Picture 1 (cartoon, rainbow, N blue to C red):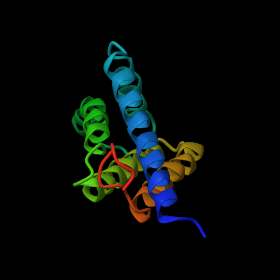
Picture 2: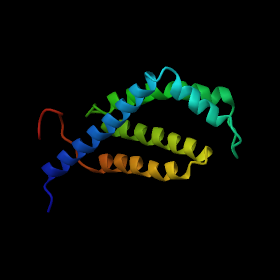
Picture 3: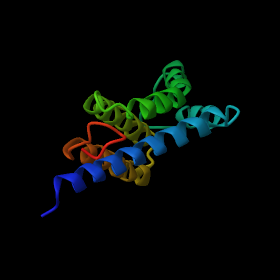
Length: 134
């Protein structure tokens, strides 16, 4: 039988992993000198089965790094952990949808790993504080 303490420690590790993923991705996009935006904006204007309006795509691409950094910081909250995890799901599903539109099937499948990180974080009990093991 796995102790509740161990499960809480596992949740902390999962949440730290989610935070590192988001903060790393967000900061790398912010400091790409527009490379992230330019590359992805062009992809979405290609010959695709589903075509979204360029202003909609560009607005979302502009917000992505800020969403990632904000969500990464939001996941530090113990009080609003569940809300932050649901926001994680919404964001990951939006990325999954984007990969689907681009017909990047392996990336769509890889997004499931990120969804499962959120599921783990949601179902595992959490510590009341980052600094205590209670």
